[in-house]
Image (cartoon, rainbow, N blue to C red; front, side, top):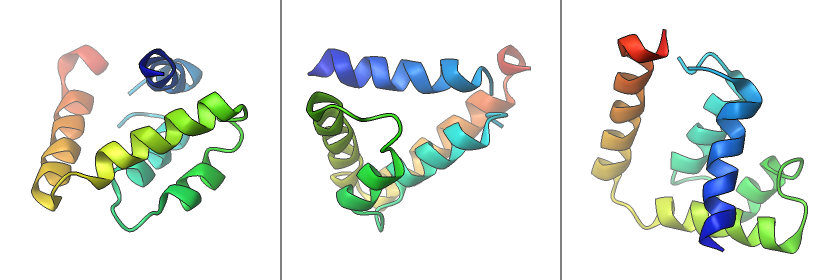
Length: 92
């Protein structure tokens, strides 16, 4: 199951290939992942084109649950970390 989650996280950037991330699809998925007001059901509907099998749907649910368990401060720090990565010289 953890492998499916890792593959899902790897597949999205490869699908878009780049970084503000430069890919609105990836930015939207990350934003919905981090947003505590988005439920797992809403998240699953948003990812329906990517998570089609039961295993993939379960992985998406677990990924969203990981973010739902975090404090608002941690989520803000995560967003800030992403922005720092996007702004680094290695993403340009």
